[in-house]
Amino acid sequence: NPQQFSLLSLFVLILFSFIFLKYVKKTRIGHLGLLIMIFGSLFNIYERYTTGCIKDYISFFNLFYFNIRDAAITLGIMLISISIWKEK
Image (tube, rainbow, N blue to C red; front, side):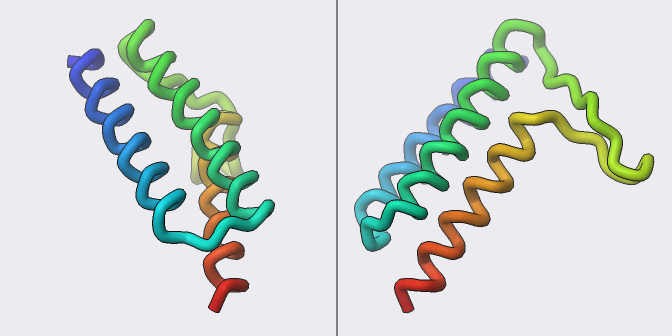
């Protein structure tokens, strides 16, 4: 059921955001990464909730298919990782 999966995804997103904000040092790059990841995730959740699926429309050498929201999530996680790496 897409609606149940959307609710589960939203719960995981809120949990991850809480953990990040509580345990990771506050940096601009980390906050930017979290913001980008949250927006990408929320738009994916919205599309899954309204249409029942997420359409991937960008092909990368016919090996990977993704959408802009997936790219935003990946970029956000990369920025968060850089923030954590620079902290240590």
